Length: 62
Image (cartoon, rainbow, N blue to C red; front, side, top):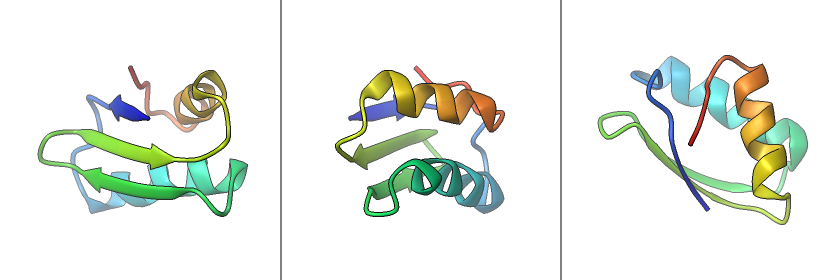
């Protein structure tokens, strides 16, 4: 699944986003690009759950 995160602008943001997802699924595979503000996530967790965890971490995703 892919998300656009408008306020993910740096490496620190990427670490925070990655941690939020790994807290749900430690085996998730995440590829992030702060330049385009996109992340690709491979996980078995439902999209809505991942999106909610990102929002709780301060990174609203769509």
